[in-house]
Each structure stands twice: as structure tokens, then as C-alpha cells.
Image (cartoon, rainbow, N blue to C red; front, side, top):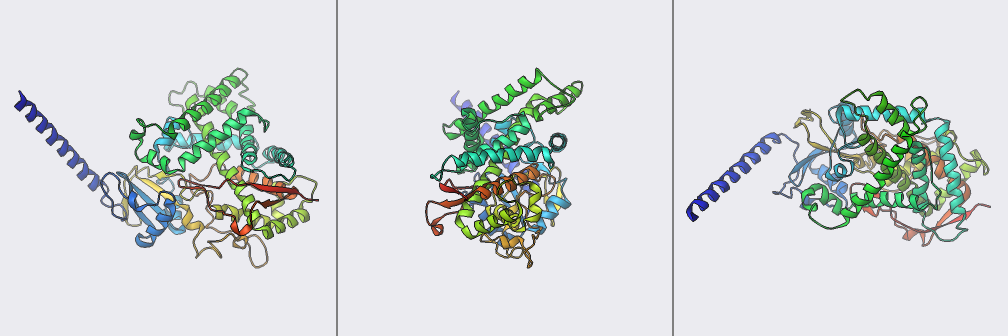
Length: 496
């Protein structure tokens, strides 16, 4: 009996080893023509060679050895990194369709259930993106309607900061609330009072989510998701909080369903539900509640965190460089004055302020690797073979800090966007919003928000720090999946 059991166990072990070896050989053959990269180890891949606090820095250093396209292994998964402006343009513009897939990271998949704008690829993504872009335009994106909403929120933000009466404060909370309200007005047709506990909760959830996503724990969650199912930790609180947030989105959808206007929708939720009715007889429609819920979460979370983080980093940089803040204020007074609220068109007459905002975006580099892509079909790229489904990371940071493309890439310097006559100068290496088919959907909204909020604040206040400028640290607090600015306190003194 024991002998039979041992024989069966031995046969089973041999079968397991055989299957494992066959799988390894298949994997080796499938990925044999991938771009070269640093050596990897079983199970952990190249993780020992990557600085998980700042992986984009590691990728830049690897590119010096292996060139503009190379492979790293995150666990047992190969990841192709594309570095440098030329290679980025070749991949995501010239081969935009092939590289337009979205890598389904476990954390993103868990939060969205695999639905929505961010994690989908192919026809599903195309339909959702096309609808969202059209809907945003119908609600006034790039026109006066959206601008009026931002201007109204800018007034609220100025009033909120005025209440501190030159007392020390943390600008993060107010910046988050102002930006969240703008996105919320488009999605739900409503805004919140800054003192509303519900608004505080929403902003806290978004912060909690992105801090985890950008942390080392978040990286390990994406590499070893099965392990985290059985472990306690911060990820459980993150997922529970996001679920409560999504419950609010579902409640909003239920509320608008009761009084639906399909001809003249008043917000994104109502427009989406109107489209659901139009396609109710289509069994393959992408317009259903799960895609609505996930897309709304994508727009609210990403649309709030990235813009709000950039806004508060802009104030920190103005504190760090008071001479730049003073010059921006002078241009505001000359072009806008001190009484009326800034408009987006004002930027055309304000080359220095426009250059400062672009430099803030370049220097802050809030998304150094973008959101990971994947190739939708087998593709030849720069002499290498990248199989369908392979993860591809666009190293946007490599273009934003290339010394061959910028005057002063490693320091904050608005002259990077000014010509010898002081006029605003574009630079094709400015990839703060990504490039290609999966570039930032909300770029137009973010640009308008940043200009109006930034100029409205500097029109009314002089910002100063709580420590000497030489001691102010402008490096990010979290710098992994994204670069999240540090929390800081400051003073806001009213202009006379």
C-alpha cells in the first residue's frame, strides 16, 4: 500500500516537473527574440536590479547599456521598456494601433472588475473613449461652459484660502477639493461645499488609492496578487474604501435613471445612461452599468489626483523660486489686472506664465512611465520581436529630461519654453500628457484647470514657505507608479 502511494507520488512529481520544463521551454521560445536586458532570476526576475522607490531612474540607467528598447522581468512577466523621444514616437505614434493595448494590472483589475476606460483595449476601449470625448465636447470642453465652471471653482478656492488670513496651512486639501468639484460637475452635474464630510471622504479615498498604487507594497501587489489575497494589510482598506466610493456612483446612476432626459443630458452619467437605452437591444453593447461605474471612477480618481498634485506642486515651486512667482504676478497684473477672474484665452498674451506652467509639468514629471501598455498583436520593433500581450512601458521621463532636447533638464527653469525674444516656444519632447492613441483623455480639461487655478491664486496671493527656500525639498514623496508631491505647509498673503 505504501509502495503504491510512493509510486503514485513519484509519477505525479515527474509529471509536474515535465509540465514545468515544457512550460519554461515554451516561454523561452515565445520570448526568445525580445529586446535584450539585464539578467533575471527565477520567480523574482529583475527585481533585485530595480530601485522600487524610483524604477524610472533604474530604467534610464539600463537604457544607457541596452539602448532605447530593452526588457526587464517583473517576477515571471517580461516587460519591454521604450526610452527616448525617437523610440517613443516610433512605437506609440507610427505603430500606435499595435501598441494601444492596456496592461491589466491586478490592482486596477480588482478595483474596476475589468470594466471601464482605463483597463480595456481594442473595440471596447475605442467605443468608451469615443463616447467620453464626444460627451465632454457636448458639455463644453474647450468652450465657455467648462471654463465658467472652472472659474467659479477658482473663486471658491480663493475664498477658501482667504479664510486662513495669513495663517499657516496645507494647500493639498483645498487643491484636491477644487479639482474634484470640477470633474464632479461634469460627471454628476453637482459640486460639494468644501466643508462637506462626503467631499472629504472622496478626496481621502483617492489619496489612499494613489499612495498605495505608487508604493512598494502596491508594486508587489501587482507582481504577486495571489499572495495578497491571503495577507492582511493596507490593500484591504484601500479596496474597501474604493468600493464605498463606487457605491456612491451607483446611487447617482439610480437617481438620474428616475428622471432621465435622453435628448438633452445634463451630465456624463445621464448621457451614458441615455446611450444605454439606445443600445438596449444590442447584446454586445459596451454601454452598461459596469462600464459606467468603472469609467466614472477612472475619470474622478485620475482626473482629480494628477491635476491637484500638479497644482500644489506648482505652489511649492513658486515658494522655492520667489523670483519666478514675482514675475508671473507682474504678467498677471499687466494682462488680466487684479479684479476679473482669469480666462483660458489670457494665456495667449502671457508667454512667461505659460512657460512656467509647462515647466512645472515637465519638471514635476508626475507620470514618468505613464500607464503601462501592451501590444495587441505580434509586432517587429527595432529589429526585435514582441509577442502579442507583452507589457510595454513608455518611459516618458526619458524625453522630459533629455539634455539633448532641453536647455536645463535637471533644474526648474521656465527658459526651457522661451525663445530668445521671450516668446513661448513649444518642444516636441514635452510628453507630460503622454502620446499616441492612449494619451491623456483629460489633457484639455487639465490644461484649462491648471492655468485658471494657478493664475487666480497668484493674482490674489503671494505664497511663502515655513522654512528657508534653500531647505525646501521639491522631490516627490512617492515616486513609483507615479510621482506624488510632498505634503507641506505655507502662508498665503493677500496682495495689497
